[in-house]
Amino acid sequence: MTPDTIRQLIEQGLPGARVHVEGDDGVHFEALVVAEAFRGKLPLARHRMVYATLGELMGGAIHALALKTLTPEEAG
Image 1 (cartoon, rainbow, N blue to C red):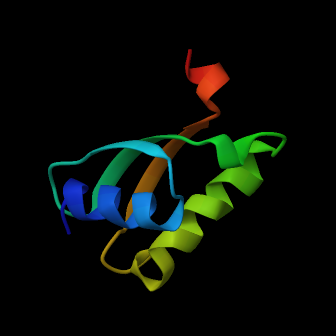
Image 2 (cartoon, rainbow, N blue to C red; image 1 turned 30 degrees about the vertical axis):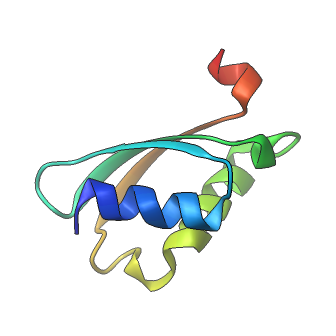
């Protein structure tokens, strides 16, 4: 698994999102996801939205994904 693949999957699942993913061991990753779709949602709901874009990869090919989820306004 690569950071670029994860970025593409999140962008496909959350159209319009800006996504930056890092991770160099192939199983542990960190992602910053900025999306209008997060407006009015609590952090847990935002994380679930991102996890839904990755489906069965979570817990398998992606062992761990640390998320920072922001609306465009929060991101500045």
